[in-house]
Amino acid sequence: METPMAVEVRILDPDLLQLPHDLPSPSGQPAEKLLDDLFTQWLSLPDTQRVVMTLLQEAHSEPSSGNQNCSNQTSQTSLLPTVFKEGSTPPLSPRNYPLSPRTQRRLSGHPLSGSPLRKSSDPTREVIPQFYFPRGLPASKEVYAECVNRINQIFSSYPDGLPLSAFMPVTKEICKLPSFFSSALFKKLDINNTGLVTKERMIEYWIDQNMLTADDATKIFSVLKQQDKDYLMQEDFRPILRELLLTHHGLEFLHDTPEFQDRYAETVIFRIFYHCNKAGNGRLLLREIKRSNLIAALHQVDEEEEINKVLKYFSYEHFYVIYCKFWELDCDHDFYIDKDDLLRYGNHALTYRIVERIFSQIPRRFKSKVEGKMGYEDFVWFILSEEDKTSETSLDYWFKCVDLDCDGVITANEMHYFYEEQLHRMECMAQEAILFEDIVCQMCDMIKPKKNGYLTLSDLKNCKLSGNFFNILFNLNKFVAFETRDPFLIRLEREDPTLTEWDRFAHTEYIRLSMEEDGEDISMDISIDALDNIFDY
Image (tube, rainbow, N blue to C red):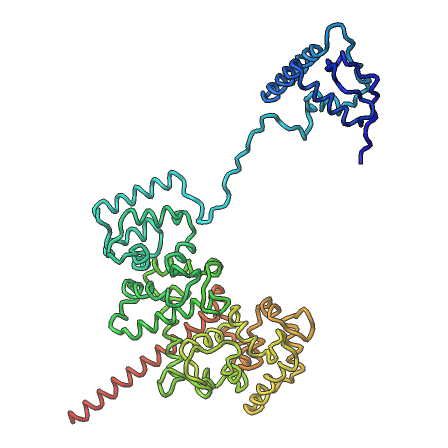
């Protein structure tokens, strides 16, 4: 709390302040009350009012430089003496104390030259260019003009809009998409189902939404996905596969067999989701497509006339092998297989215990609606995992089978549980049995886990021979082939190291199945000829 300032009333000159003669005596009044009365009297003087108005007007004006401030201060000082009467004594000036440089700069209004913290009187705004584009980077003026010019050329003959029959140039030349995307893209643009796509609608969807500069994965994802979804489902691929079956030269022989067209399309879709959908939830995300080889396969199948050269997803030979393998196991041809059917796979190569784990749906929930039976989609996942144990999906599939307690670690006890049946089968087949202790040492040397005696999924993914680890545990035929180092398999691997284990298996099986079918045809022809000879006789 501030202490009231003591004032000597005797030093206040009434003539100097132009006080009225009837001013009451200050004796007995508080000092603050006396000062208020004197200040009120001073403000009521005409000269004081003129000075105050001048100061207010100068305060409202913005001086352009410090010199103007100084001149204003000088002019204000020159006005002050007019308040006092001529010949009267002015008040004493305050004592001149030496001011610090900081105080001098603050009073003069001149900032320190060269200071990095100097505040400019007229700051310039720096415009930061846009660096984030939610819909993609916009096209340059040249690319934009070229695209619009090409659209005008294509639509010039169709002022009312392009029909589906004339939409192929838009798909190939403007959108740079595979040709069998025409129907899907046309349906995406024709939102009112008029059967026509106008030029304005094409520019609005493809150019205004920056699809022109988007990458191929984003274009394909945007065309295939449903409007309210941010992922792709299996049904989203069916339109492009129907068009592929109708337009591709390598699939013309299937036009007379619609049932096999549907099976081929299903198999392609199952293979796409097997390899690309790492989460295994049936929802294919854009980032999963970008990390896969699906886009390259889509362009390759559009350019390659020989469908069997497209080994990724679209090979008809691969479909033929998968379907025939399933048909061989499905004895009653109800399109479902049970445990006993699966035990016959690969000439009884699998153990009972691993088949039991598969049908317990530990590695993957069956899509089949019949309890205790495996459908065609489930079999596709099985055969792709069984015949190529180097892929991430396959390793995850079999790791879940062997990990009995589902703790993310395979221990020696779990390995012994599966190898025990393998050992018994080797004894029954009069083969030299390998002790489990020796097998454990061999597998640890092969995989080199981070923690001795505990195998994790990451340990198996870091080892190129991880597939042999699972073969040792539950596939006797492949285990024996690995131990004997079949020279035929070694030669196949060296001929083309780019081929996967699935590619080699499918090629070998297709040849075998083709020879069997040709043999049946030859035997059928021989039987018919023999019957003709009998009847002729």
